Image (cartoon, rainbow, N blue to C red):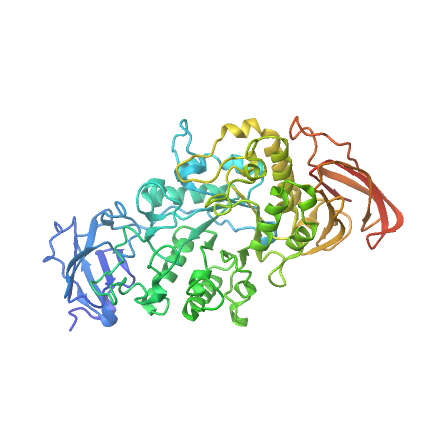
Length: 598
């Protein structure tokens, strides 16, 4: 029998600080005895034995323990003794070190920030370790170094930063998709306190922070969860993992057991922690196809993985309304962004493979004759359900510029990735990202033609920001129009799109974006995917009168090498064209975009 009643025990998992000490709780159903050992008891297993609770939990309350103390759990099992890092540790000395009794308190006073509506988001994905790792930076490759660039983000127009995974990982360099302790913030990036400071400063600059989380596998290295309490079946991972073929993923045999209640709770608790304790504005779930299916295909469903995703999204929607969850699935599954009540997974949005691949192909293809405007049309039109913003669209992401693929300018012209063709066609892709329906996303350095491919050992080259300051300005101007900063391009935030002109011979496409329609709302985007300018080119317009030219990507102010084609306002007069009652003549430069509105 327990010497303490349930009523006197502190609720929670891991190390829970309270006024009389620290309570500890761990799940280890196959342990015979468990003790908590730490700097508060000389790591002596005999001083603080834990009491068994129901369902394999163990509990101890230690009056001598305090915030900052190091500790581990000592498990006595039929297969030997194991000193384990607390699975719920909010802080660790390293991926193979000790857990630290963690004080979650932080001065969040005044942090009442709310993320923008989905249709007004522009996301910037970055990797903490390489984003701002310059020699003269005070905090190389850390959360503080991102804070040093917040003013830059504001000027660029970014209102959401998505950071790649930051859970404690093995080694000092990583993409982050090998989490050892999912509750602990990696120390190489500055740890938990610097993360909270960064998020608060981002919010003060009206910038949301979205976090990439990894639940399709753990580790596989430096993984104390592996055979945590000494038990395993088939020599597999034990209580936190599947112990059959369901364990197998492309990253190792460490898929969590989504069918086990304690493991489901563990993952849910982690997701909610980021929103509660860190004020994170949203979560991007890595590779959800390996949560909802066994082998990543649609032919081998994993129902308990699907129900876990539903449960997490339901809990987030209930407890933290307004926060965004994004799936990276890339299997074109429309059910991911359907409401869970209708049988969907309940995500707000998902990364869209149906956009990125055709758009990249369109600008990378060397010969104009091989460019498919119908593929571009389909990419612009594609949506998963009834909401245009249930997809995140991009031409570069960490996956699209690594693993055998490079940055778009590098793919366009490997021999001259900074030259005219690379600049013109990569910005053409960016213009599609920032004018098509969807939530647009950029990847770090894209706006100043970062070259090569993404590696966690190679910092972003910020000198190129000065070398290509005009290209940065083009991105800034596109973002300002996308977010309707001047008040005359509301349609780019709207639900509706009509692609009404498609000339596959001359490689010209034009589309109409609108929200409610009319002056200051209707937007016409014209894109020339041809190596020659198109002058005196007649297209239809949704209304008569003057259509003001809001952006010409061929303007020499963006780069001295651009042709500065003499594009101007268009005058729409009576005359049937492209299904409209009005038409007008335009001039558009090679590999360029024009944006018009009234």
